[in-house]
Amino acid sequence: MSIKLNKRICLNLGSHNKKLKGDYINVDALELDNVDYICNLIETPWNLVPNFGGRNNRVNEIEKEIGCPLAILEDNFADEILMIEVLEHISWRKTYAVLNECYRVLKPGGKLHIQVPDCGAMMMAWNDDLISDEVSHKDPNDTLRRMNEGKSWLINPDRWIMAFCGAQKHPFDSHLNIFTKENLEFHLSAAGFLFKQIEDPVMWKLKYNCFKPEK
Image (cartoon, rainbow, N blue to C red; front, side, top):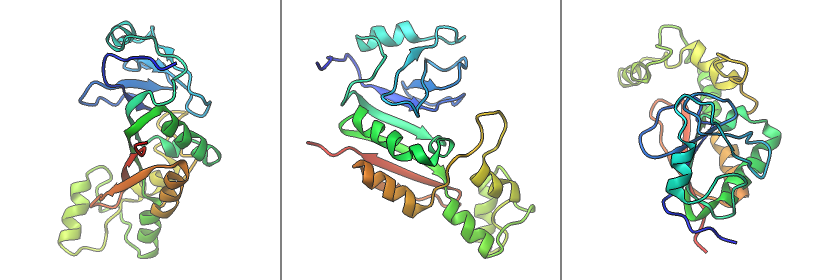
């Protein structure tokens, strides 16, 4: 039975401590202060558990605004899903299951915004000898400046290895999958999404807006 909702549902999956503009519901496997619901994304269908222990707890406010409690998400439930730097932390064996769950949960016409490291570009950088510690690790503008000046060193070695292995700042910060443009698009197509790539001028990331087709 379909539930009539009072507002748009926008899920920020794998939110960790990201602070985003807009009224997103933060979902993560970790019980962090800004996380609204706890969920292990590899276990489908997704079961959202309220994080009442968070310092910035918003569960009651969210469910009052929506008009229903959140738990096992219904089909065609969400208007938008963000998965920014998340899918690479999920086992490559679970990629299709997780994208398929995104598709199930989204409404027809709903949008999935996904971002992962561009390991294809990183492999090309290695092959073309474009890696040097003279390039900033964190500042993409440094890479852009060097590209515009015709310099050959474009990727910091720490940035390069993080694309494949993760930053490893905590036990959950390792990568269990790698993506190239070709294999990410293959998985998105297999899950049923229409998609459009958002170009990343510094070649660090693969960014896509994906849509569940209207029925």
